[in-house]
Every structure is written in structure tokens, then in C-alpha cells.
Length: 409
Figure 1 (tube, rainbow, N blue to C red):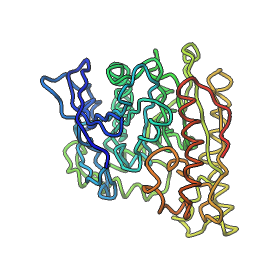
Figure 2 (cartoon, helix red, strand yellow; figure 1 turned 90 degrees about the vertical axis):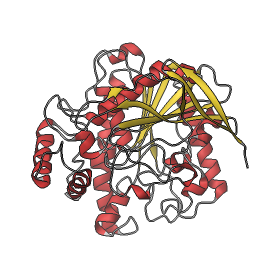
Figure 3 (cartoon, rainbow, N blue to C red; figure 1 turned 45 degrees about the vertical axis):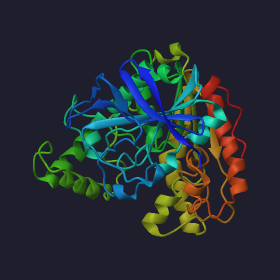
């Protein structure tokens, strides 16, 4: 067993203690911001003494959080007021590319500290610094209460990126070479962040994995969802119990009308005209059978069935593939496209095909974290290692210098 030791780092906010294991320094559960319910978050403050950053951070309140497993099997802790991030870096890091992970989960669930989102292989393969962030979810993050009282979760993400910009050099990362990467709602979040860039963006590159860009919420839709939420809650959301908020939130998830809680983008997925001036580069892609897990859950049909294949094709193209291609075309016209990919690979005989999330096991976590997943259908460790090597090299090469020569798996 690898020995775990403590290590310290001094940042502009103060000194903190993390762990050192297998040549990787980990500083976890760093409070980058604090928030009050339905208010925009405020930056975390400097501290005195040595901050203990040896344990996993908290996660945003959500339903069924007991299903999440944080590293070393610890149960997750929900917190409505603390927003945390974690930094992982090679022991001798100096001026390395930085990769910031934004987790998905339909804007309703998930957490960056999940064990399956481990970034050790990413760090060792690419010699990068990795950051994983949390942000408010569901109604707490995206309930629409007015033009200036919305997008709380999106604001959290932007604040986390500003923290990275101001502090990452202390961990051996290059603040001028930051790459965002995220899958599903995490990728959707990155597109929303791009839309909000009014000045110098706090990142250089971005990788959007399976973004559901066919689901973009405008103000009218957000107002409708907000009215439904308040009627079902039947009390002041600011004073309601957390359990009641989560219960109503869950009931709206079952409406099957897209993403009831997500960024409100009245102008759609805008690409600010100033963005090309900063040399931003974006890599974007989808899988062939994005919607297959959703179709199977809703209807019991999968791609081994004619009706299942047809439904999968319709919804995959409507929600993911066509909108992502159109967005890539717009990026290309602005000189911002770093590359596009399409994943067709899947284990032979898999009933889910090349489904939504099939890229995640090869980028984050370990084989043992993912080997029981139905989408991998008994994939051998040897094949896993081969495909993972391709993904890791492709992603970290892009993060280092923007190079992309296709995804050959």
C-alpha cells in the first residue's frame, strides 16, 4: 500500500495542509465560496493558521446522495452554504497545464468528489494539475426568481474559475493555460460560461463532452418552471425546509420536459464577439447512441430493438448531436473550434451502444470503479487500458497546447 503523508502549500489566501500519495499532492474540500439560499455566492475569505485540506469536500444538497461514494468509501456530506473545490498536482509541479473538471448530473445530482471521478491517471499521463469543483444544483442553483436572481449555480462555477486563476500557481499550475472539461450538464455548463464571457475569460481551452445543447432554457421557460415549483412547494422557498425543496424538485424531474433547473440564457448559447481576441479553443463531441440509457429507462427498449433504435436516433440527434454540430459550426466560423469528435465505439453486444457517459470511465476513476457498468458490458482490463490511454493522451495533449488529431479508438 502506498504511504500517505501530509504536505503543505502557501496560497494568497493562507497556508493549507493536504496529502501526498504516490507522487500526487491532494488538497481537498477547499471552500472557494460561501452562499445563502437564492443569493449569488461570495468568494471565500483568507484564513489564519493552517487549513486542513485532507478530507473530501461537501456536496450540494440533492436527493439520493447516499448513492454517491467519495474516495476511500467515505459518505458524502451535504452543505447548503459551503462551496468546495479540490486541487491535485504532481509533487514537483511547476507551471503545468491546468484541467478543471465540471461534473454532470442533469443539474440535479452528482458531486466532483465521487470516487469514479478520480483524476490520478489523468495527472500521471499528462503531467497536469487537476481541479474538481462543486456548484449548487436543482432549485437551489437554478430556480428563477427574477432577472437578477437566477443562475446561482452558474455564478458558482464562474467564481470557482476565478479562484483557480488567482490561486493555482501556488500548486504548480499555469493560470494562463487552463482547460475546462465536462460531460453532459458539465459540458452544457461550459457552453453557458462561454456565453457569459464579457472580459478576459478565466480559461484558455474547453472540452465539451456530450453537451445536451438541444435543451437551452430562456426566461419564459424558467418563469414557467419557477411558478410550478412555488405552487407545488406552497410556501416561501427561502424559508422552506430543505427536505421539502428537494421533494418538489424531484417531482419536477418526472415532468420529462427537459431540464427544469438549468442556466437561463435569454439570448441562447451566445458566442461573445470579443472571445476570438483571446485565442480560445474548444473541442466538442458526442456519441452515436447518446439517448439510449434515457430511452431504455423511459420505455424499456434498447438499441437491440427496432423501435428502441429509432427512438434513440431521434432523441440523440435532437438533444445532443445536431445542436452540438451546429454549435461547432458557429465556433468554427469565429475561429474558436479546436476540433470535433464522434464516438462510435462500444463493447460488442452492448444493449446501450455508444451511449451517453461511455467516455467517462476512460478519463476519470479506475477500472475497478467502472467495471460493473452496463455500458462497458464486461470489458477486459487490457481493452480498458488501451482505450483509456488514447482518451487520456488526446485530452491532455489538447490541454497542453491545443493540439488535436482526432480520437482514434
